[in-house]
Length: 277
Ligand SMILES: NC(=O)c1ccc[n+]([C@@H]2O[C@H](COP(=O)([O-])OP(=O)(O)OC[C@H]3O[C@@H](n4cnc5c(N)ncnc54)[C@H](OP(=O)(O)O)[C@@H]3O)[C@@H](O)[C@H]2O)c1
Image 1 (cartoon, helix red, strand yellow):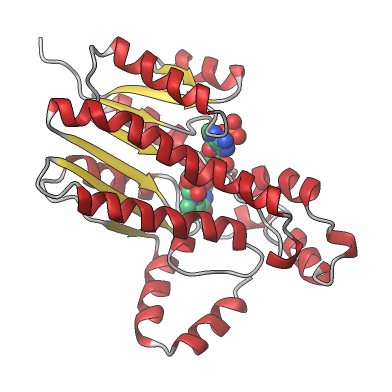
Image 2 (cartoon, protein in one colour; image 1 turned 90 degrees about the horizontal axis):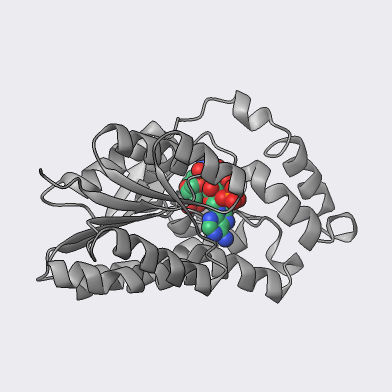
């Protein structure tokens, strides 16, 4: 019997990861999906998915995940989809260094750790696909998202270098750059913001109030946002195409952003972006 293709999908408790894990399973993949909470692991298992614990901020959980998956697959893994992340909000001058480090631990160092632990298996078997869910905010900044933008910019640099280092092998690295997608990303970031930023005493308190009325009020769900299936379409191309692309810019606002970045003078482009808070 032909073996199913295997993939790790991280951050599968909600949003894009939850959708992609189930869609891949429905399309015949053997999916190892990760989550942090017991109830989310149980929900994935109830849908027939092999669910495992992973917290990118805990290197032991990364090591344990890789050991468990490779044990179950006799050392093979066709693909890795790094997806789990959170969005730390706050003005750059208000973000304590330890909070910035935590953002990088979850969104950057953990992704690096998991990727390099998987690579030896891909090299042994002679092929593999590594796909990262970056963000349009890894290509252009927004105010009050500095920590998140920095983690995604860093990811772009690291993983594009890896892509170059893998030229000549059949292991391919791609980055997906979504614009706004309906998910729990902003809501999940709100407690982090409240716990880490002294927003009531900040010079930016009026801007924070605006953010709370907009991004965090739930009204962003009401606005037209793409669904996770647009990210899934890019993921599938990166997994299955003979020539997976380095970048998949996903959603119309993201594509317009890339076009404007190309054609507008930089100072005008960044000023326009700043109005888009
Ligand atoms: N939604 C957007 O507009 C948008 C736009 C561009 C890029 N993205 C990217 O899309 C990806 C998926 O986000 P989403 O929009 O689907 O948001 P989401 O619904 O908040 O999902 C984020 C997932 O990441 C997990 N996660 C958070 N911190 C983690 C950690 N330390 N270790 C392991 N997993 C962790 C969460 O698990 P818990 O439930 O345990 O917290 C959750 O499963 C992220 O990489 C995000 O940066 C999203």
